[in-house]
Length: 327
Image 1: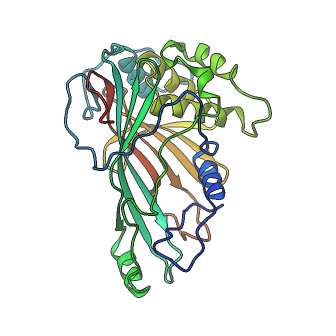
Image 2 (image 1 turned 45 degrees about the horizontal axis):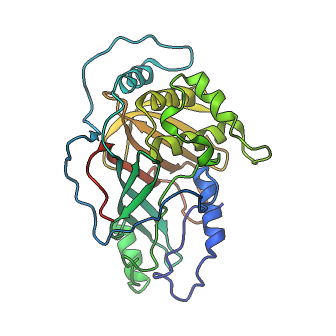
């Protein structure tokens, strides 16, 4: 399995990767089907400038670790630390405002085909807007590229200092998680159940036969879309945590850090191909911190895994607001 996309600008003499094959590889790595255009979704807007990180009234800001203690009863398949975070999240009000706004920082590590090879880290800020009718817009900042380590810098120099990914050029990063189910069949997401078992049963009614995935991976992919790409309610989000914790193969581990150094309780799901997906949750509020994919075993292109995420989506803030999109 190929874990890294080749940067065309780094190796101009290497033919560009076939777009369909590239998306197929990314889909296999991230546990989701290739991206497709969906009916009823509004035009995606790409902003020219990176979005400034400012606090806007009405947002649910991802808080620092900590917070008051609450009493919660542990269930048979949800560890107390996750159950407490889910309870805190479920207790949050649904929110008011015309638009649901989610701001993320995406970080992606790419191994080049230069000789010698080196790793580039790409970063981009994205802001997703969804209104009460379910229409969405996406604003994206410039992509920035840096060499990951001093060793990568030396390898880059030894390779002749080829150009790194140029913002707004051929360099591109993944934009959205996509569900395994038809997203139109899950709408309105604000009316999905807030009980874990009822939610699982409801989601499985939307599963198509012969999708090629196990039930656990299908639910994981669909839940990740509901958590990161939709205005699902705090109650539904808390139910998704509990549902995921009960899936076979999913582990719950405390004190897992995202690429920004923020620690939280994490849902971990290991794929047989040797990578692990992580959903990291703030213990004090139950809000999302990040989703990450980490390589667990060596492969032919990247050598020994170093524990750094291959891809990471960091939630800066999300929630309902009366602010409106730029476009």
